[in-house]
Amino acid sequence: MRAPVATFLLLAAAAAHADTAAPARGELLYSTHCIQCHTTQMHWRARHVARDWETLRAQVRQWQGQIGLSWGEDDVTAVATYLNDTIYHFPHEQAKAAARVAGPRTP
Image (cartoon, rainbow, N blue to C red; front, top):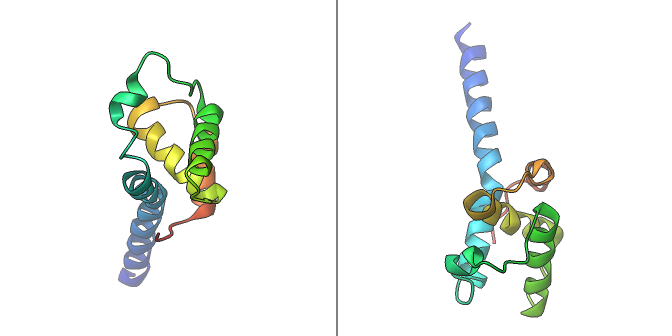
C-alpha cells in the first residue's frame, strides 16, 4: 500500500516541477540575452507595443531575430511566458499549453 502512495507523490512532484521548467528557461534566456537593453522599466513605459499574448510573442520573436539569436518557437514562448508571468499578465492559456508541450530544456 505504501509503494503506490510514494509513487503518486513522486509523480505529483515531477509534474509540478515540469510546469515551472519553461518559465525558468524563459527567465534564463531573457537574463542572458535581453536584459542588457530591456530593463523592467522598458516594459512599464506608456507606449509598449505588446497589447496581448500574441503581440507579446511577436515582439519576442522580432527582437530575438534582430539580434541574430535564431530561437525556435519553444524559446520564444518560454521568454514570452516569463515576461507575461512577471510583468504583463495577459490571458495566456496558449502559453501554458505550449510550455507543457515544449517541456524543460537547458540552454
